[in-house]
Length: 160
Image (cartoon, rainbow, N blue to C red):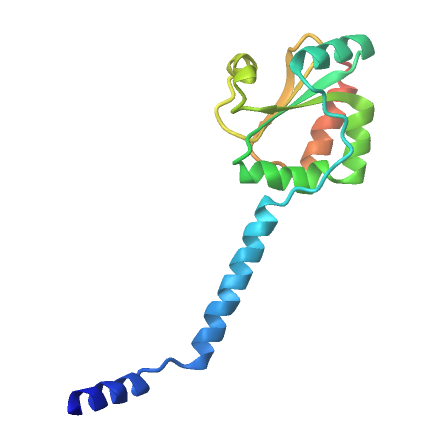
């Protein structure tokens, strides 16, 4: 019985400080909030084309350049870009008025030919092309709203 009493005394002395419980609880809540925020993508009103063929046809008919946005379901920088760039009102309006946008999931087997054609190996990749598919400008990696709008204006002003 002595051993039981001694072990219970040791457990009583080793009881953790309540500050640590609050620290770990706060850490858990903040981590979960950040994870949710990283994967959250609001809806947007960009008129994304359904497939490459319809995008090319629409681009040829309208004379507008195309915006190809290569992404993946698992791509966190892509989600951040969708949240911070494509969900912005000014960006949505500019995209819809100046280019024919198409979002390409690199994991979709139907898009393998396009991914290989443009030599996309990482995501996100933003490519502006003329109606024939010739690359005008591109960016590899996450870009911010200002850089995106600048690229969009440069491709429109270039007269392509």
